[in-house]
Amino acid sequence: MAEQDNQAAPKKGKLKTIILLVVVVILAVGLSVAGTLFFLTSGGDGDNGASARQPAEPAFQPAMYYAFERPFITTIRAEGRQRYIQVFIAVQAREQAPLDATSTHLPLLRSRLQSMLADQEFMRLQTVEGRLQLADDMLVVVNEVLEAESGLAVERVLFTNLVLQ
Image 1 (tube, rainbow, N blue to C red):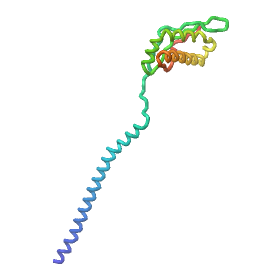
Image 2 (image 1 turned 180 degrees about the vertical axis):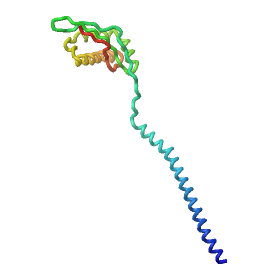
Image 3 (image 1 turned 60 degrees about the vertical axis):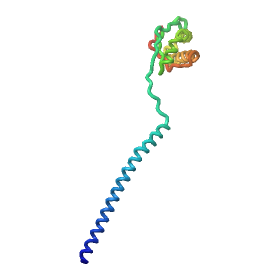
Image 4 (image 1 turned 90 degrees about the vertical axis):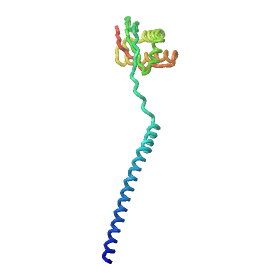
């Protein structure tokens, strides 16, 4: 009988160890699942909150254009000769409102641009820098008129054709 009690005791200790290990493994798996769910649900909200605090990139807006149908033709200053300039232009904006305002105020824009072109010097317009400066000057004139009349502005003035004679 004493032998039977000794054999039962070690089996009882092994059974307790196995049950304890199974409980620890189940507890570890449960905590792992709970931690994963916690980080997936609340951790994701933290990232969205952080990105919401950062300024968002502006959405890409394609450029829109308004091309002046008729060219600007005028005489320009030259040393001793009468020279002509003919310019076809278009204006660029990212929204439709400035282009609509350009169409609405077209007579005033044509008058101001025609006067500005008549003040140009022929030799200066022969250079690339002179033409770039002319585009910048035209942009200033167009934006002055549009801002005064409608509070809007265009982004660029583009030459679609420029002829000096």
